[in-house]
Length: 287
Image (cartoon, rainbow, N blue to C red; front, side, top):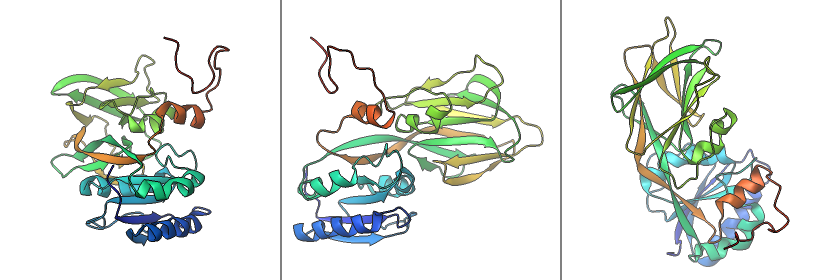
């Protein structure tokens, strides 16, 4: 890949060890001759990444989610360094970052282009979600009745605590906690998972990349909250205006180690075990 000559650092100063690690990686960037800027702001102003070859996010997955929209709009790859919890998105550990950052800046990396969801209310401009769009009652204690249409065809009406629309990348986040499936991140699909539905047969529905979804509020006297990646509220729907969900035109470029393995990440983060006696972890399936 092309060397990284200009980058931005986004550092979550509230994460233990993040500022110190940032100073180490900045020193590495300085030694390689790369130009850089840095900020502790986790919501970047429009244009902040202009002219950058990459953006190094040091924090947790939530920190990366806050930067994802601006990075996708700018077409700037994100290097995620984990100083948070699970770290499904911030895939470089501090040790890996220290050991590989110089080589990475010289071009030893690959890029995954992750699908995103565009979510909006009515005809308003859409916001971008890397993980998911949540639709629920504005009042936390209320059930909601939501009617869903896919490409103009009625799917069904849900009585539930809410509906979650997830990307493949976000399938291991709230979607997984809500009982939805794990979806490989190369799949450009939308997973619609009802949250605590009042019909046990209501399960996740997987929609193809080109689908245009509309969700109507059929709940009497209740407003809906529409949240992007659990961080931003894009508005409240009271009935007439549908919530619109689709796969976004933009993709988020994520920098990965050349030997990055999604299934290795799953095994590690989800504590999977139970390898057969014939196969050691990391081995190839018999031919």
